[in-house]
Each structure stands twice: as structure tokens, then as C-alpha cells.
Image 1 (tube, rainbow, N blue to C red):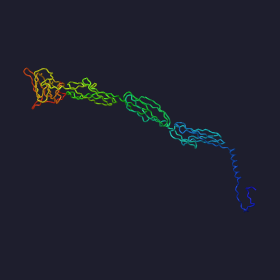
Image 2: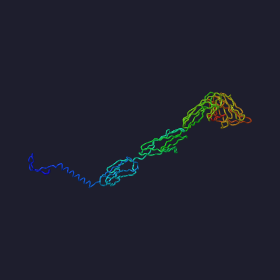
Image 3: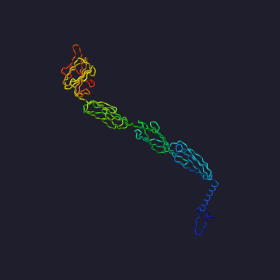
Image 4: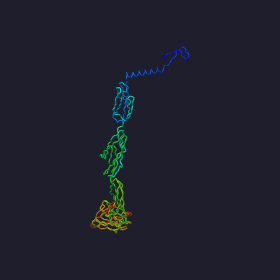
Length: 455
């Protein structure tokens, strides 16, 4: 009897059972047999029905590329099966299908497959993929150069003094590149220099230059410009010689001033020397700022009467130390007329001395000048025929050198002229007063110093 048959026979030690049918579980030998059968079938299928087993591996790709550079994916497709087969590869760029290929691979063989894309891509990140495989690649930003922080130090220099041109050159791109710097001095190229920089780096450019001629110059570097002023050296000259008074009394001080002018841009020292009568009198050294003027002052004193010439470089003027000397009453100080028979009596009733001058009509050159002391009178004879204007002046401290009063001076002119005529039997005699007279009939006018007769 087989083990899988059901027996109703009684066995020793067993209790009798009823006539119902019982299920019996398969034994271990049956399960093992089934497994062996399946393996046999599989071996048969593998031997008599081979299959392809295809997979791919992507080679390493660069993380970054430059603009315009070809992007390539290389994959190795391998068939590990015993049958030839095909495999579909789909090349994706930024999520979109770019190219697909059906790859046929013999059993146990490999195929190298490349996919490329060549586009002028903008800088940024892009995703590339092959079937389920994906990777990110970056297109770098090209070299992009800028010039910043352009300076001149200093912006004002003296002749042949150097200034430093400096600037920061920056490559704001991600790729190395070269950049040419061109330095122009007043439009003329003085330097060309090639700068090589890696991406996102910078370099400080520096150059020193000078100029020997004064002026304002433009210094330009690749579109950036600043003005450089080369200063004019100190150039000092004197002008405006001024004497406080053209006439002074003995021992009285005279103030002399000159102006030192610096037409240069730079401060400078200058010695101002003053000479009197051809001899060095005084000197002073001063500092005059650029494009400025400074006044220099001297005081001079002379005790002896006379005329003194004051000289400072190419400037000169004269002052007089007065000779105070009172003429006698009736002194004729000048006479430039012919002799005649006319007479003129002058009465001065004031407490100041007077000078009376006769001139041709509407002229200021005296033909006759007579000194009349205070509270005195005098008569002048031998006056030639003619018509004369009469001027008179009062004052104190008569200066013999300048022939004029130097203190408390007043100047007048008779409004009416005096006419002298002579015949065989008569001549003209005039009497005038040069002081105010009650009921007087001779009107007078004031005269300015410049219009009073000078002799």
C-alpha cells in the first residue's frame, strides 16, 4: 500500500475509526519534487530559450561648461544576457526630449553611446538626463570686466611732482579672461597693459606720472577720467607804489607801500627792497600765497629839505621834504610879463599870508606872482598892458620848494578880470583887497587845487 492511500485497517494500538473519509497532507517528498520540477523547467528554458539583459551606465560629466562649449553625455550600454537585444535611450535637456536612439547589443557585448548638444546657452543651471538618470550642469558666465574706484592722488601737483593713478579692475564673470587697460594723458596714450584675471577676482592697477608744464590735464583710464592740475610756480612782482604824502615837513614820516602780486599757483617768498635817492633804505621778505597779493609797507623820515626819489624794483616816485620859509612882504616869486606902466596895489587884511597871481584870460600859468604877508599891503609896478585874471590863496607854512602854503589853505579867483591900458597921458592903477570887505563889489569863486596857477 502507498503512503498516500487511505487505509481503514485496524492497526495494533489504534482505536477503531468510523467510516468517514479523512484528508491527509502531502509529505515533504512531494514538495521537493515540485521544486525540482520547476528548476528543471527553468534550466530547459534558459538553455533552449535565451534572453537579453541590457543596462547602461553614464560616464562622469563635468559640473560646469563655458558658453558655446559642447555638452556631451557618454553612456556604456551592456548586454549581460545570452540573447541579443535592443534598448531605447532618450536624451533629455532641461526636462525636454532632445534625442532618442534604439541601441542593439549582442549578448555579452558593450556599446558606447554619446549624446551631444551645442547651443549658445545663457549662463545658468540646466538639467540633462538619460532615461531615468538625471544630473545638473552649469553654464558659466563669461569674463566681464569693470574698472571701479578710479582715483588720482593728488589731483594738484607741482611741476615734475608725481601723481598716482589707481583703479580696481574686476572680472565679474565666472571664466578667466584678459582685459587691456589704456591710460590717456590729455588724449595721448601713455600706457597699454594687459590684465589677466580668473573669474570673480580683482586686481588693483597703479601707475605714477608727472608733467613739467603747468596747466589742467585730463587723465583717462578706459572711459573713466579725472582732471590733474599742474600748478604754476610762484611768480611774484611788485606794483602800485604809493607814497602817503608828496610833501612833508622835516622829520615827518612818510609811509610807502607796494603790492606784491603772485601770479603763480604756489606760495612763494619774495624780498621787497626800497631805495631812497639811489641808496638801499629797507627790505622785507614776505610769503605770498598762490594767486594772491600782499601789501608791504615802509616808513621813511628825512630831516633835510629836498626832493627824494623812492624806488622799488622798476617803480619810482618822488616826495619832498618842505623848506618852510616865509617870503618878505611884496616878494615877487615869479614874473613872466613885459614891463609896462600899470600898477597893482594889493591889501591883505587877514591874519594869514597870501599869494596873488595874474594870468592871461582863461589860462592857469602865472605871469606874475606876489607874496603878501598877513595884515599887510604892497604895490606892484611896471605891469604891462593887457587883461588879466586874478587868483589868490591864503594859508600857513609857505614851502619854498613847492611854492605853496602847506596848512589851512584856501584858493579863490576874482570873477571879473583886470584890464591895464596906457596912453601918453595916463596909465591904469588897480587896488584890490584879498580879504572880505563890507559892501565890496568884487565877487569871487572858489578854485580847486588842480586849477590854481602853479609855478
